[in-house]
Length: 166
View (cartoon, rainbow, N blue to C red):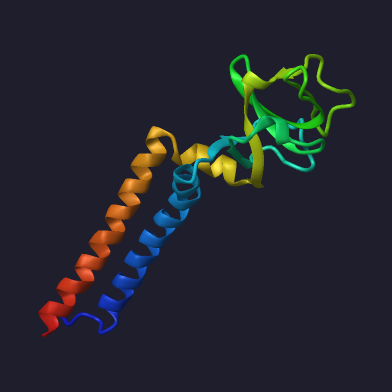
């Protein structure tokens, strides 16, 4: 019987743990904020550049709308998409916001009624939105599960090799 390299179980374990850490690291920025009450969106237009580039992920938290101040960024439902723009005026008496995208020259045509607002943009991460869109798809979830499975199998293989050595 051919002798196995001495460090092979350790290499398998390190690779397995690395794969599991990668999967967990990719899932944490989506799952933990949702547990904490945030809505998460990918930025697909450049209306807020350079502050929020295309491909970013937005973390939006529902908030008391009368407390939102000028220059804060809100997310709101606009027909079939969620839009994030900066508040120019909060017209509390009328229950609406006047907004403007940072990259736009003029304010938005229509004020945003309070009932269309999802919440205040609390944070954004550049580029991560593209990755999030990729692995939140059905195929992305399959790849994440397969990657986690490979990590587990490598760890189990390392244990088995160590057991045989004893």
